Image (cartoon, rainbow, N blue to C red; front, side):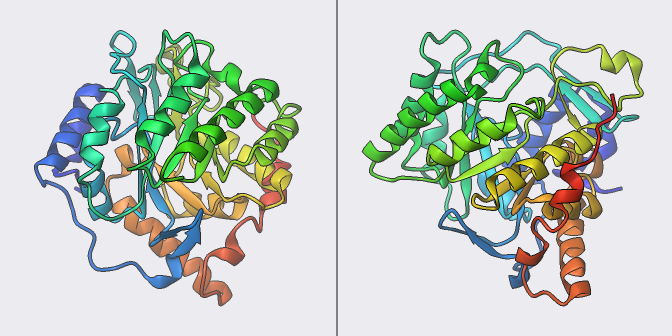
Length: 358
């Protein structure tokens, strides 16, 4: 049995999902986690956004909401870690129960609602985090009257510690937040954020995180606005409101965003479409349903330069990190490549043209 963050994986999967998550974070704080053995193979490294990534496997936002264990996650073998989502002030999120897990579907539904301790608490922790790439995922306050202002304030406050920023306008659990993905609102948002970054002493790269539920006909204009707005990259994608692919009927009735294996086809198809729309001009981070070396390779081939895990790690355990690295190295060796670049986007057309199940 693989240990999950120093505790038995089977034990954590038997617990209430939110309780299991809290125990996993606490075990990392206590040093009860598997360390990566040695340095990464240099063939896995890339320089993107002006940052040197030792490998393309990242921990997605949502696990380390309050920047408590960024250093420890890097020690497990992740090439980068994303903390948050962080709002300007602490907020409790939605009422519980608010996380639901289906072992049958290898999926999770959450309606957390940006629960976090606020940016100041994370700022103090990140000041002493040491080396490694740690992105900061920014959210807007649930009751904010100026959500664009919340993101701009987050950049001003967190610029000194962020390796990069992710602008999370795609969570389904804050009412109205996804409206900021509309082209006109998105253009205004990016303009304000560029102004905030220009005024900061440090100017971390700026990434936009999109929802997988964006309509096909809306995606070209959204991609155009992101390109023209000066963003440095795009993350595809957040959790979905779709319940396509689920077999657990009771699980499917829960409200919130779904992540995990059933999200993979939808998120990967959208990733490939964004890659083609942006013509490879912006590095993309792919996530959604990665739970094996094969699925990770598919994300890369669909257009991702980097990938992120979360739900797959819950079900597969930390050995998934190493298995993905080995699968990518094997794919490179098979075709005689000494870097990841030739794999990126080579099947984007195939993935972009796939039809989704109803």
